[in-house]
Image 1 (cartoon, rainbow, N blue to C red):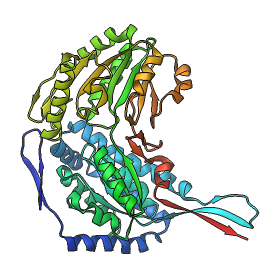
Image 2 (image 1 turned 60 degrees about the vertical axis):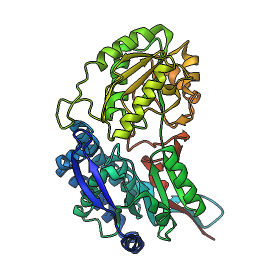
Image 3 (image 1 turned 90 degrees about the horizontal axis):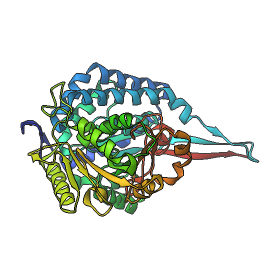
Image 4 (image 1 turned 90 degrees about the vertical axis):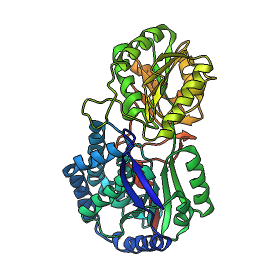
Length: 451
């Protein structure tokens, strides 16, 4: 099977990649198990040193990696550079804190000595998406590898060029053979991989459908799974908010990566008093965005990553307008490019409210008051994150328990940070990445008791 990576801006073929054979896959799985036997016994200090080198390689060759990201999935080149730099941050974070996180936890009992060890579990299989082709991989791989596990990557087929470069990053840094391996395989090999004795856990970032399928396979084989799935984040603006600042924040929260992010703000829930002002100012700013070639330094909005994604977004726009929403800006599609679009007077019965919209579409929703805003925010099957904009931060802090999501950000867009746990609730998945929590997901917390 041949996989083609196609530039969504101009349709050019970026690269072609041949799927590995069943025999090659078995060999890679077996070599991952053998590599684990050696890697887990490498001194933590040495593993940390190698992870630091991974970060150095990322920055040294950042332009090459950023260019591949942009060519394969259409992210503006400046955002692609920022993505690679963020991967360096996660390397530095775990290099700085791994010894602390993995240290034994001594607990006083009636034993002479009792404590919890943090041992690696084996090979972790990662199924990663195309929207942040480097960041999604590194936020799984770095804590996993520095803890002493080995990793297998099955990336999205449209970013196999990025996957190949990621493999080269680890190789250049001196990570031993078999510790991190990129697999050029179709998704029909998923169960073969998960069922292999070497694989002890699977982590997936992707759609609800993919997450459900992978969780079912992992459950059948009694193997741990971590799922980071879709989101339909609310961006709530209270009457006392600084509207100009909220608009600026909202623009980034919705349009970063052309809106192709699970944690992007998608439902803008505005109390009635400031609805008209916010919508007018937000629309003005959206109309200033420059669309074009994502390799151009001045481009803010490039194409969506694939034609089917642009088609799906257009269908959601059309359906929501038919349901009674008002088109305030954009609304048109040309091949992979979709205009930044704003829909006004969206209600909870409409498509753009109920469904995740993976692209530059902002749904404007009226709320009677703060309580109604929280009620509307909670009317979602997703539970990834919520933003609240207000000048009354103490009140907002006290209301954090009103949100069932995995993240609650006040006067800031929801974003992932190596220092903070990241993950969702409801159909947005389960488990946590990043921070200490992310490392502990793939650790055997082993109780040791001496009498």
